[in-house]
Length: 401
Image (cartoon, rainbow, N blue to C red; front, top):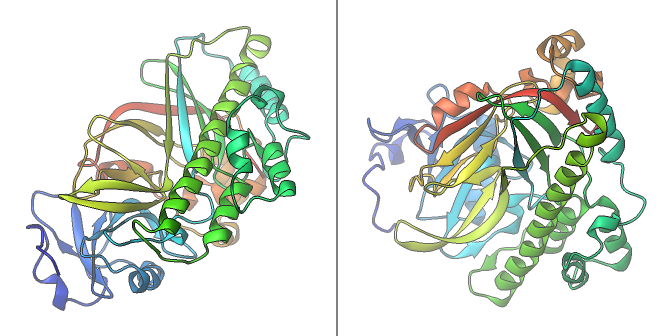
């Protein structure tokens, strides 16, 4: 092991796997070891991390053993491979599989200023117009959106070695579409009565192509294949970011006809939470894998959405070195989707969404606030990572089913 940071608790190496110990009285995270890999953990409850999280991280530690500690954000929960809400550093390797099959997934937020607050009937009309205008779930556009025809992005997509012609056609049809799961379009109101539009979606089919192409390879930093992955990933990230912008433009274009108002776009944030980047931390140049985690550099504005029906937050990063300048990307699940359908009642979701315009469909029971951690607890657990700038109360939520 290299030189250890002063907050590494010396009792941890001999402790049972996953048992948590305070890092320092001055810090909000605790530390544990999983397969002899040191892990910093924010927001964990109890004396140890769950057996499911331990089981999800063990395969990762076998592939990527790092002298620098892993970091788990307070929304962490197990995934098929690794842990959502994880930040994993390496001085030697890139492991594309660590970011999953939706590289580039992220959230954009757009401050619309002080427009007249729509009444419930107007919000309902806006919901229906958005649902008609923006394909969601498995739906796609019939062709590439006309307003996106001139983007340089299409030539870059055609240069990807793993995207065949028929797959490029699908990517064109999926551009500016929402997808399903926890992806959403939401209209919220902040504490100053200003409206914000949020869009959460990713790279759709393209992220899966990237993941399939690189599989579970380990790429040596500086190698031709590692550099090729970073170039390919950049195209995927740009596709996802441009897609979010296209959705936001499509929604804002509906305001004059539906709400008889033209919002003034006063501020926009477009943040990604599934990606690998080259960064410098603790005096070392490293590859940082963020899987369901946002970058939160000093002064950097970010977005941390709550679950459907709960508050979301515009935040400002504190540049914490312990988290590799990262924060949570949301609330984080406590119930897997199947478990949510088995245990939650339809009436619970209806009650939780009272006062919010949404589809009303029981198919979204797995997106119930009860299937997620309490966003206020998550925010409290990362006070050293981000500061709250705005709190957004949801008015309208569009999701794919």
